[in-house]
Length: 142
Figure 1 (cartoon, rainbow, N blue to C red):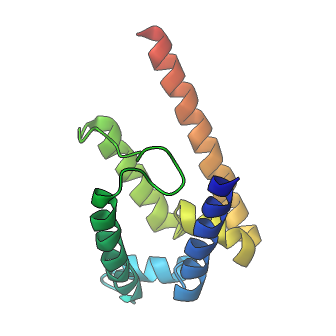
Figure 2: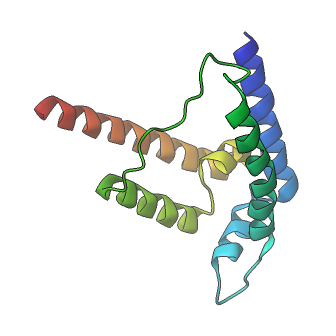
């Protein structure tokens, strides 16, 4: 129960930050990506503002034996850069550039602009399901 409450509080804090900063607005994100047109640097300031608390969190994490809501830290053990990572990154970036949304702002957008965000979230979930199916098929054939 404690984990669920912490997850809910963390998600609400993240969503509030997206809403207050305006980063759940696809127009603002597209304007940030439009370097040769109506460039809007506010997303860069939001990203830069995230670096300080994250740097502090990494320093604190090194001193902890376990996180507050789990028995151990879930830190990826691999640093392999392969075709799947590059392809996924390209798809993510193209989708972000076209829609002006990525998963976090899309979920927050369900509360702010439900009709536009709903289409994106449905497509995002469909993409995740296709990926899972392809992953299972390739694992079964190996």
